[in-house]
Image (cartoon, rainbow, N blue to C red; front, top):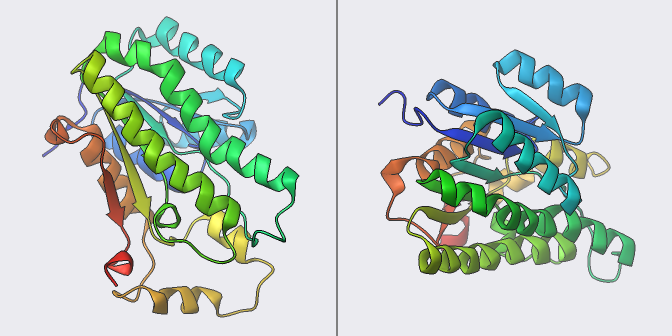
Length: 250
């Protein structure tokens, strides 16, 4: 079914690489007008050029930059139908190892940014109609690990924040939905960075934890975000879509 996002304008944070780049490419294929943002200006501009989409330099942890980004989208595009809060960072460390500074940094990027995005984009999404917010959480927001204290906390926060936003939207308008996505380990730059200082064979160990015995692919996540962003999911809000190869079923 081609053009599933025809006449829709989408804003994807963290769009320079990984999930964000894959989602942007999929949205472009399906007829959306796509704007990506990233704190990495050079890589963001390169990705935008490769995909044929627009780019905004954007620190998602800064609320003033969120206001500026949404104002720029309204000025240039006149509407916004889809927001994908994808930007995030990973962090490996148990509760004792995690410094206060790292705790704050992970929550600023992985959780606070989602709050900012929902808060500042919602008026334009409501005004534009048929809006969808998709917040990229993680299976780590549902299943905890001993060495993911900050990341577990932030991603679990995204899960419940999503439900609160969805209920607010349902009370104030029937034109905006909000859902979260919870991918299992996937071959992305974040995972590679997390494992860069660990012993070899870690990816294979992660695969063995997943019942289907393989990591997620970026396309798996992009397809799921496409569904939640399209009108095919018009009755789905306040829920989480888990893409974990059966991990949470155990």
